[in-house]
Length: 104
Image (cartoon, rainbow, N blue to C red; front, side, top):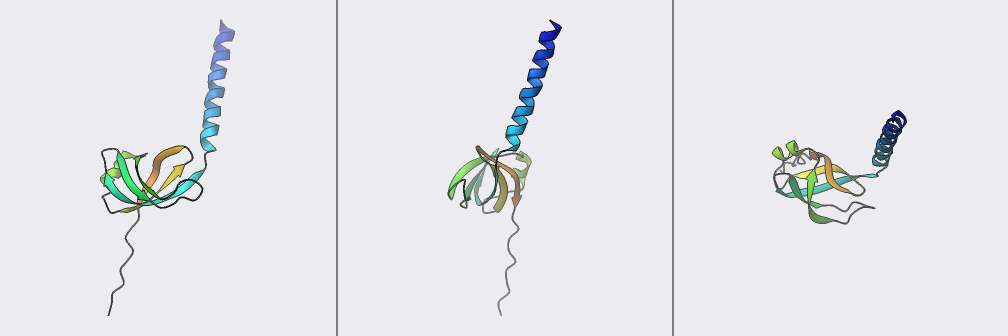
């Protein structure tokens, strides 16, 4: 019985390590877009084309940190990180508005 427990524990550790290794191999992309709407746990964003991953489109995305939704409003431009096969916005940041030049 001890052998079976050790074998099961070893197998569980190997599966965990394999899943962590696969997660780290996902390619990341820079996501840029304009917020159209803020939901309780989501953002609806008109995103720019992400070369090699997604065309420009408007879509609803989950976010990795729901606290960020308290700081975002419709019309804000954002950046985030996205990963292959994962439609969650990671590390969402509001892009500060560009300074306006004063006309003479």
